[in-house]
Length: 237
Image (tube, rainbow, N blue to C red; front, top):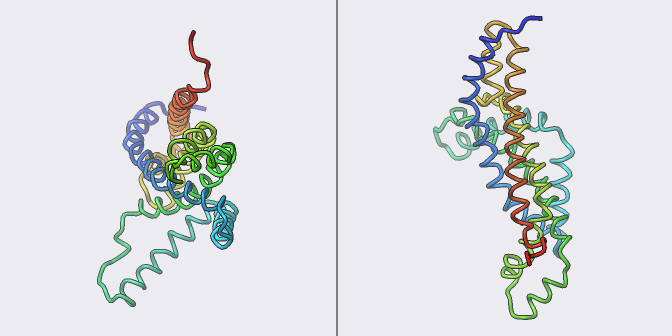
């Protein structure tokens, strides 16, 4: 078996242009999903039965269906539904099919990551003794102050390993964005390979790129986890 190293190098240079797109999807998804997931975790731990049941149903639906199926469903159905709403109901002339497909990628990955992070935050909040919250309220803190100053810092340390796993999984899942015609790492490599059927070389290139990116993410979270858990280490004498 002979590998076309010249093609691999050229594909690698092309793939570099897709890295910002992939990282943008990851960043936007986490920025939106993290607060939503936290609010869902707090609501799920609360006393509202209706809200808790809705959240449980949402998490079960999202986590119980393949991401590929969600992409096919949303990318095929959502534009058609929005087009009908805009033109037939609202009477506007905007063509929804001209919308950048990356927005559909945002929707799919935000829906998935929010469901996962809600469970991550819920389990992390459960590691903090409820007595600490009660003590904070007893000394005059508001509920928000108790969460910001006492509960969240401790829960964050417990949640960081799972947040890291979620981020790495999200980074790998963005390779499915090519199904929505988003020109990410995988899409660029597949386009380059299609001209000369050099798919093996193209897949080896993105294999290496994803290993590097995932390792970098894990390294960043490792350093963050060490700094966040500094209060657990005994002070130097």
